[in-house]
Length: 221
Image (cartoon, rainbow, N blue to C red; front, top):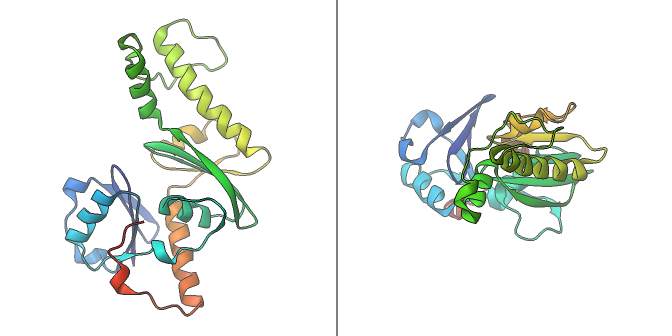
């Protein structure tokens, strides 16, 4: 059994503890990847995946999360199912932060991803067009524009995460997860968090004796 998280920029796959990513235009059919269970947050990615793997099974309709949040994406649901208690930070093209307590999703919020911050500053003024300095010293006041932009982006992200975490355990995943995790001494970086949630969903479906409706496998969530 292979799991796939079809995101905005990459297909992320999981098999037997191994995680890897593939660009949509480079995805090729491989029988070794079957049976394939997937979740998706991008209609174009879903269409591409099903063109190559028409038998892929959409797991989204079978993932059950105790939450009052409306419109929670399948990837966020899966990440939340991956832990029972703590704060999940999924740092990709957007940074999502979700709070879990005793298997209940208390809510969450969305921030721009690190790369998106650069685009936002550029939209304000060409004078702010610069790459973020990810090695900036956050305990000193910036003395140039690049550092000022970098400081504003990083500090806002870190303070929002810190304010949400309080005494809860922090879990980081996503492309920039490892980088952000290093600012929090006791944080856990886990690239397989979403897939752990997907595996939990599959197990719970089996335990409840629910048969997966394969006619729904081309749906988008």
